[in-house]
Length: 452
Image (cartoon, rainbow, N blue to C red; front, side, top):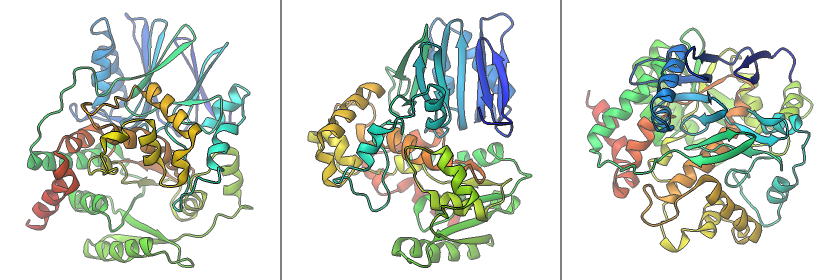
């Protein structure tokens, strides 16, 4: 284990963690079980981010009934960034947050379950550090991606390691592990939601996530771009941002001067000035391979590097005691994959969503995504509760590509995800397809605020 980490032993589990990472636990006196909460969860019903209180509520949910339905339901509607470990006799269940933003990489050996926040840690713990599979995909000559490559589905960087995805839970019993879906639950029926009511809920929940999910004593940064998500967050939480003396930031490579980030820079600077907010501009430069940061990065992320240059810029520019809000997630609701051809509801269709390059036709990629469908119990039918492409983006791109970025950024500052709650994602997802495409919920929020 890394030097300086703290050790806990609870109900036969050994847990090591960085002292700066919040860890709370509740061990029942009259029930053979425990709740362990890593990170920060937010209970909007209780209006609470008291981790002890949430652990107690988790135990109450675990005790009710003979199955896990009440527990699954309670976890479903928690916000924040967390991993939850629930011990119930000989059974262990591991849940992630709404988008699995705190990664959990796992493997089962003769010694039992090994799970950690980083694929590298798990691979080293089981002495299986090979990365042949991921490298064969990332380095394939047909796989091209100008915006950067990422791993398909739930593929971990290391061959012997697996990853828990959003909306799924890992259940371990007698050294046997099963990864299964808990949301949407069996029998879940999407609600017909009014766009005005959904807009109100999104605005309220964004403010609640800020109120309950951050440390007001620490510097607070948030990414600002020309995009809809960014503008909605800014407008909906502006009073709170002023209270926090928040710093908006945008990054741009002044040497390469790409159009997309130049447009973000221009729009964000106007928004920040108009909103009376401090504004930080980061000149995105290549990562310095000889730097102390890059050496630590290379040890931490073996097998796949997502965006080391941005992570190092964060490290150099942000207060190391600070908090940085990343505004990913709501694109689940505003339709990321727009083409809905029914003939693509299979592994080949997922491959075409994963990459626009000729690598989409690769037999090994298609075979892997077929196994991913089984691993996540993804309903690929036309009549699925939620469209398979929406869940594929949510559970693959956010749980892998996005979460990989958060782990890198946390080398610089604590990552906050204000949209990371199903109380926002699900109501947006349950709008009609046309309303989602037109961003009607966002327009209602912005129009209402502009008229005030």
